[in-house]
Amino acid sequence: MVEGYLHKQSVHLKLWKIRYFVLTSNALSYSKKSGRKAKASYPLKTFDVIIDQNFVQHENNFVMELRFVHEKQRIYLSAPTEAERNRWVQQIKTYKQQQSAISEASFDGRKQPSESSSILSAFTHLQESSSVAARRLFLSTKERKEERKRAHLPKLKKSFSEVWLEDILPTWGDANCTYPIEALCFAGIPKEVRGRAWAAMLGNRLQINEQLFEICKTRAKAVLVEVTAAKEKEKQIGRPSLTIDTSPEMLDGGYVVVTSPQHAKSTLTEQLIADNERNIKLVKLDMPRTFGNHPLFQDGAVGTQKTYEVLEAYTCYRPDLGYVQGMSYLAAILCLHMDSFSAFKAMVSLLSTRLLFDMYRLEEDRTFHYLDVYEMILKHELPNLHAHFDEIGMDPKMYVVDWAFTLFTRCVPLDLVLRIWDCYILLGTPFFFQACMAFLIMYEQSLLEMDVSDTMRFLHDIPKTTTATAFFEALDTVNLSRTAINELLAGGDVRPWSPVGKRSVEVEFPEAYEYDT
Image 1: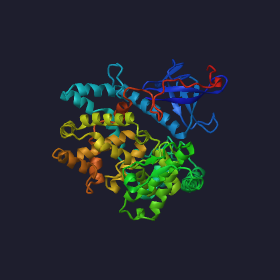
Image 2: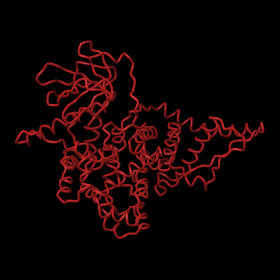
Image 3: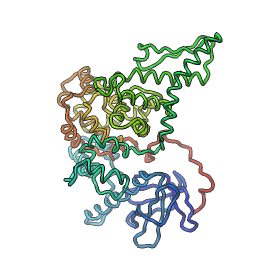
Image 4: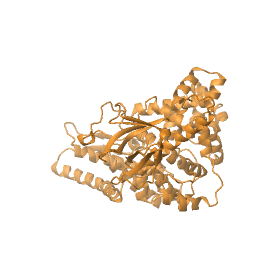
């Protein structure tokens, strides 16, 4: 299911109005607002979606046309970004193809159940029933088979680099692109185009520009100057000052103790300065641990300077998040393939994705939700290993949190990490869980013989001999599809993920949007 707000052109007055659309496997419907009764519903079999129409334009937004097969009616919708438009168009086409396949496979004309809509109930049933028949039925989902097919790369007449540079990147976002982008990512993006490919896949939905990057960098440099000036001023007028324990012993533990003399009142300005100073000091402390053996990340090296810039700018861009240990690994990987500004832009987009945003917010409820889903998946995929981990007291939070915070960068060989990132940036959070299962599948027999301390050491330092070939072979044996994992993450809530959580209050729109169609 896909849902969200789109602009819709009214039939008679040709006015653009915001409407809430819901796309299911059978129909596209819309209402004035989320939660309201649908005003209209269009079966998918009655229309085709066209992306390259030339009849209607809507400011700088991206228009798609719904052209009805047996009627002269046309409906025009406008998405806020090209990527969002492509998401709707591709999903409509996918559902229409599924309908065609079901129609061909149905001999008695009875309606077939939608596989994606029944995944959560099938998983629940699987937990309650240990019968072999139920397990085999669930493991052979059509969606997972389709994923495996999409990951298989056909023979190409050009090299991977030529395909990316000549055919894919220049026309990125074109729904008519015939190249198997998913398969190319699974095959590995060439290092000479990896930065550009990642940037294209991440996009720039938050409209980050170079001027903003320069402002954030300047602000980061000004923070230490402000701190020094504030302390000097306080000394001159004899006032007690805000003191910050920035000793290596305290910083190494991942936190800073802020103290002030008795009866001293900290102003908002002092608090902001203290937070920024803490973030910048943590960045400088954490950097030597990040790829310490890599020549580009030695003290004073180019990679180190770029990573400093990106992290310091980001902590000023998102002071609510600040700097959290693990961010340096993400920034360093990006700086290996991009200039400072491109890496900053990619960092903002990457940390705005579901998994990373929720984890770096350090909110207990969201973190434990991911861990609960992980444990459900582990119990389904590897029941023997799950039972063994329970027996030795190996809790998921003892290793999965680190995997998520750094996207495997801290504990997996660099060459393999880059291959994993190629796929994660394209496919998102569900692929993270599939990748976790792939590592456990590879080393299940060894892990079954380890105690908790050996398991901890092993999972925090995956053997350097682990190859991409072995990893992707193990990944291919993971049974849960990404759609199934998304269903588990949603927990039955059909609304899309939001960085601010699930709001119960309806969004109010201006009266201009309340005209009837």
